[in-house]
Image (cartoon, rainbow, N blue to C red; front, side, top):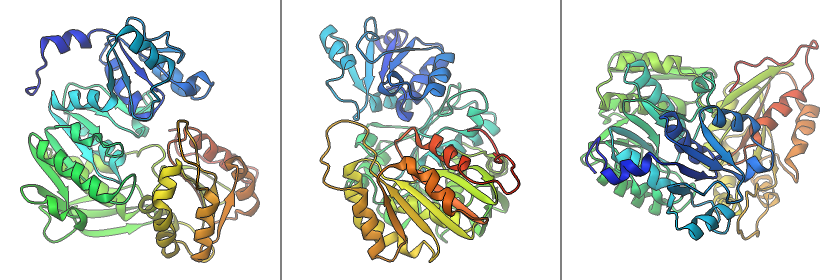
Length: 474
């Protein structure tokens, strides 16, 4: 459909209620919130909400007008459409009820595709850094007064401060969205501006991901932005490149990093990033390139980056107690884990890493690379605990355990220890943590990890009986 236009049928349908199944998940909740923040009738259900989890998120979703129902089929009656994702089993009552009533069930990615294709939009793709770059780009457009919208998979600390969940906003300007490749649906999107960050081994074979990236780039309606990452070289023809290499069109220079952040220059403007790690400097440069693609000057973008508060569970500092810092991070594949560990080592004497893999297929997929990557990142005194694989439901072949991952790492020289139950983490690290340590909690897809990181903080002895220091609530 043409920019800014929808057919009459779609407009009529969008003014009726839409029901989102799995509304507690980050991707689904973002779409539901974006709709509800526009004043459109929205409902949803989630198994985790039925089980009494995510009560804070329930309150935030209800506060903006999302009508929450048990996942027993009762919320479906009267809905114009039911939205589900690849992760939602076809047999759950909401989907069975929709089929019985003849209510169309559409994929989450199709809803996002409608949004991206029907208005000025910027879609961020790549196997690492999408949530942070999407948040930075949104912040740049806000700084520039563009009144952007947002649909993303990570909760922005700044939006949390407005009482929202943090992964969606409704604006009249360009929509900034995270475009995911993990379930093969990236090919559905046709944004005005399409950006590809990198290509790492994550959910599927890199060749299949590259195929998606190339289709995504070919469908972008305006300008395509491609990182100067060597793995993306086949995509550079006709695209605008960004990076720290000498041939990048949007080039960062004079990069300096330390344990607290980084600084670099773009076109003579100094950019300061408050998040640690060279990877966050690369994320900031990508967001600046996205801003430039819609005519935001570098100085404005640099101001926004300097004030960017971060994304929840993306090297989020939970607090400090007794000289020990606790950090919570979404890292879940070898590249992301290595980047988080490197950032942690840049600001601590010793790293105590806690990792929970998610899903049996991802654990099998990353097993070899994990043991090849981490030995060069961790120091001789660093410790790592790996808890059993997080199982979120559905069918799965359980032919691998986190014990296998820990055994591989020990063979490779890492002091890695298997822990059957992640709830043992607080006591384990509380017993060995000492001043100067950084405890890094890592894992994805488990909504309880953020609370667990705070329990780890609570397990630490205070140097002088003081409560933990917490920089912000996320």
